Length: 322
Image (tube, rainbow, N blue to C red; front, side, top):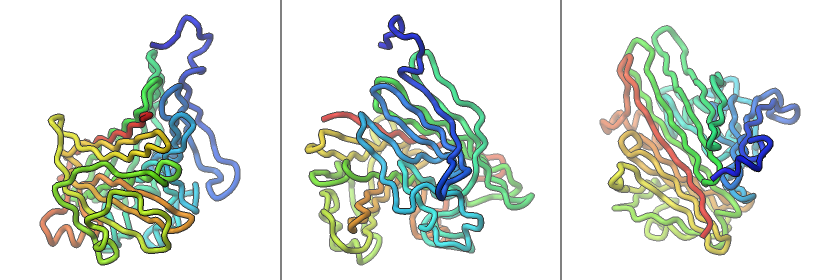
């Protein structure tokens, strides 16, 4: 319960602070810092698709931030190496026209993360919920026009962040709309003593680099100078229709869960890069593969939206002390 009688101003418990970065690679870009008592503090990046950058719970950083750090969006993403603009952060959205390797003339992981959002509302409820609503459009012709209405929420007294995306095809033809939430977790959460808590029906390595670890993917492998390892896990939804993957670090006394609505995001990918100076775990709910839209099209599994059709995707990230 909020101690309202003792407060002169609710800003003491929950506050949203919009700003503009004044220096470095992200100079001129907007940010919205959401700060809540006894909850998850979150930095939102409106000029990077309204994705989530850094995040903290009880002063502990949750998100992995890449060596690139915060940057301005890439002007011509199809002509660039995607990793040059990959800042990491708690959630990077991949899509909306391609996920994974470059395919059919669209670059790695698509262009959503390079789009500038329109912020429509920043609100605080009486019970200490901060919410940010924005709109992101991808349109390159009169024929092609996808739009995402995005809502973020974090709250006082509960380690929970919510993301709701409503994707609409406002164009004139059937469109491929693959999408993946690149949830990036780093040190100290993803470090010595950490493990992934997940009970998949099956685990499939993406390639030979991951094949030797398909039966031992859960424990933290430690810092090793080697390639990235990518797996797909077949997971079941719970009775509520949601699936969950958790990272537990008993030495740190912290557990973080990633939950998603399986109805629109039925697949889960895991990305591990244990190299020195990186040490990142990606838990990635998706509606597609990471092998590109041509691969999914050939398999008959390419997600599509007809003109006027809408799809709602939901993601939650929860933190608690253990």
